[in-house]
Length: 266
Length: 297
Image (cartoon, rainbow over all chains, first blue to last red; front, side):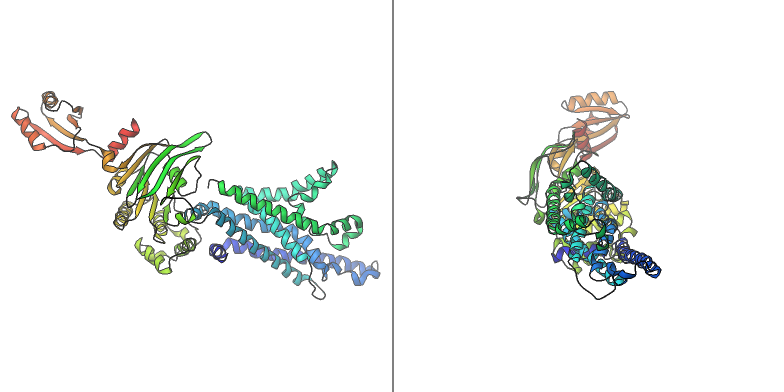
């Protein structure tokens, strides 16, 4: 395992594009959360000053206080997954465009070993992005530090969705196309598909859709519970099931990728 | 002992048959040239035996065993263009390859860089290298880990004449060191100079393979001319009834199915028969001639 990590490390340590995008991710995580927190705080502060929310004053900053901030930030930062996906897609695309993928096989790396090194690399990136998420929370949060299960849920979401990005990058050799498909499906096609399924009574399929399965690990900020308490409770109770489905679907995706890659002409 | 045994390999890309039931064996210590015009299947064949492409049918064995990652580590390969991470230095690219091989030391990297005369540019990123330098770096990379076999696909592509001579000398040097070398090229002269064995491919079919001497076969051509070509032709026809006589640019080409001929005796016979020769030269059959005969047929 250390050997595979070393291999990936040698590839990226002087890759300027990689480090630039990684730092952009960190800045985006912290910046985006800070902007949302600032907007919320200034909006609620004005209302407190108007006397409209006097009673709730002590609870107002709750979405950005520990432990609620973990959930609030996970919900908003999950919208930044496409930015992280770009890093993953560019990484695998670099192997295609430089023809190094086939060169590694020629030199004695088995196809299984190549994918294993990428799998381990994706686990490392998941840890890195989760660290960015924690950093953003520490930067923005108020109140006393408290840990939450949401950190694990966020890590699982990142891993599941970046696995999809990796698979796209591996099968679609052009990075621009792979990134476009990823973003278009995530932000347009799947939400439309959900609407369609709900409209025609196929709701039961929704929790299994590629992105929705892991999106459901993260509940919307608790402050939004008032709009649909029942639905909120239902989703809250289903998190354990969603963990299982997310792990199952990610495992199936990787097993399929390993199996198919073994037969692929490079 | 055979280093590589290829059994009935075929490869289809959709409707296109890139290889058709190709079989051959490569003996240890040989320099095996794979010849063929563009699109004949040379690179496809090499891609299959290096596991980059999967054969549609057939199989192959390296060192008597089915191919796997361990057998590939004993083979140094340059396939088509030299492939490197452009943003890494030449040294770092070789270091990365050593990590894949899981053997060798930084000293070995220095040694192969010196061999291909790239030591001074080792720390420059590959994107600053010329094509010739990349080609030499690729050869250095293929020598890492002291492989038993070298596969060189068009190794002189992009090199200047001096570079071509250097690579040829390097191949001959490696041959002396008992490397088995598989060399794909369309430069017939190159192959003839360095190869002991050869296989000729055309449109995915193996036309012939074996020792270069065997491929060349018996046969030589004598260029001969006198003031009266008709008289000379009649004389030669009587002397060599089996020979083929062709006239080209006021010179007769006498094609004989033999390994040697005594030009002095021939000159003397002509003189004794009243024919005064003003041109007499021996042309041995080249790989180019053999290749053209095989591929044009």
